Length: 453
Image (cartoon, rainbow, N blue to C red; front, side, top):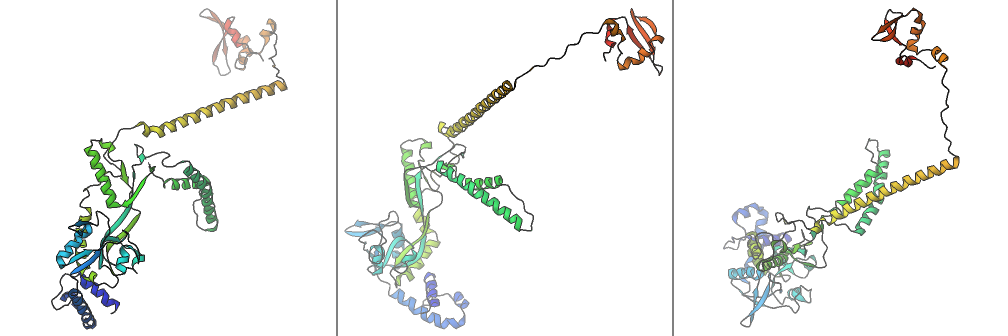
């Protein structure tokens, strides 16, 4: 049987309307297949499906894992009965196909390999199928055959809620001393390297490109590294790794228990789930290699998956909304003194640096003054006073030249007329241009007009 025929067999297994003459495809689908394949394909498919349905066992031997709430067993009237989400799906198919089952548990509750665990029972064909949400592993395809995918398994981490600042950011969070040292080393090494590459490119390339300085390149590296940080500090001594639905259930029941105890709203969300996931795997039922049971079973399982029933079953016990998310959103809290610890440190360090710089400046100035004083003492310091001159005798005082603006007055002094104005004597002097000027005479103010050359 060719690969194309096997592919059509899988298609036939998921179709809901199988005709009475064992033709696995509806008439509309058959018309879409080229005519040269009709006789060959349907002659091979029809007996295959007919034989599968006719030979479907009335009792299935199955195995499972003790993995509540997904799968498990309990003892009822001396016989094992399956419980959990996997058996809810299996019981729906049991009612549809009218068969019974017998549970055979592995010696060890593990997936195992060809000789142990669930895979060992399937590989040795001691059971007809494994009813459990088994992860689809690439290395297990040579041991078992997986059926239709049920869902995707998300593994995540449960941890104590990390501390964060009330403003949503921290100046130095979450970096510690080691991280800061590594950042400094990276800036010193990568910054100049980028500058050299830009410099070489500007020399080789004919295009005019902007050349950045070393400081700019180092700032770029620092900013790029700083963007890798976070505003939270996930410091904890314990972490729990588990499947996301199971972890969500733990948080939900812990929140309900604290609510019943009357604990304050702000103290109920002690734990938080890591955003995203660390592992994503598909899950499905498994069958022995060469088994034909999955041809019939997968058709009904696919209908349950596509209708959303499987997803509803696996999440029905969880709340409709996310409990205790990482970002509490509207749940405001008052500022605590611990929230301002970083602010206190920054302010204290700032004042300390400023005080140290101020003291250094004072010491430097004092040192400079002492040094200058010693230098002056060593060279000798002489104070030179201005020379004292004796006053001119009265006879010579009157013969001194007047100021430049009054030299013309002195030249025409003999032609000047003396007038008394308001009890004071003035000379009326006529200048070259015909203007008249008054010059005081025999008064104390006349001394102001004496000029010393």
